[in-house]
Structures are given as C-alpha cells and as structure tokens.
Length: 124
Image (cartoon, rainbow, N blue to C red; front, side):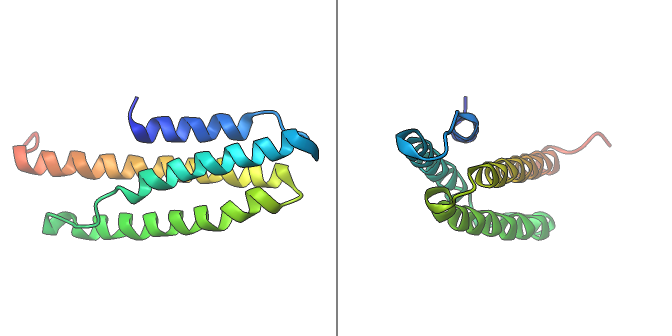
C-alpha cells in the first residue's frame, strides 16, 4: 500500500469511527481525525511543483492549482474538526474532501501515464 493510499484509508477509517456527542469519545474522535488529516496533507505536500514537458504543463498547472485548493480546504477543516458542534457535517465535509483528493490523485496518475506514453510512443 502506498503512503497516499494508506493516509487516505486511515482518514476514511477515522471519519467512519463511532462518535458520540460530548465526552471523551468525541474528543478522541476529533483528535484522531485531525491527526489523520495531517498525514493526508503531508502526502499532498510531497507532490512535485515543477512541470517537465511543455505539452503537459497546462495540465500540470491545473493539478498544482487543484492541490493548493485541496490544501486550503484541509486547513479550513482542521479547526472545524476540533471545534464544531455538528460532527455529522464535519464527517460529510471530510468524506467529500477524501473523494476530491482521490480524483486529484487519479488525475496525477493520468498525467504520469501520458508522460510515459509520450516518451515511449503511443499506439500509432
């Protein structure tokens, strides 16, 4: 399992863990989710920011902007995880963020595939 897959899976499990309103269990849920968000943020921070090929630079620029937006969303959700009274809303926001990060990572894999296809030649 790659570090990205592990980090996303860990956050998903944390979001799906039982949570109770109030008490120690809620505090533990909040803290665990917040810690797992840090792992996901670290995965996004490790992405390369330097486009290599000119023909892919526009798509890489789009991916870079998307990454910055995802990092901003993680930054905004962090305090909500620790302070919000509506844990269901926090959970839904976290799951939506996970979905968007998965889509982002798939676009990065597509870019890597297109880069290799260009180097090796396509099916033509």
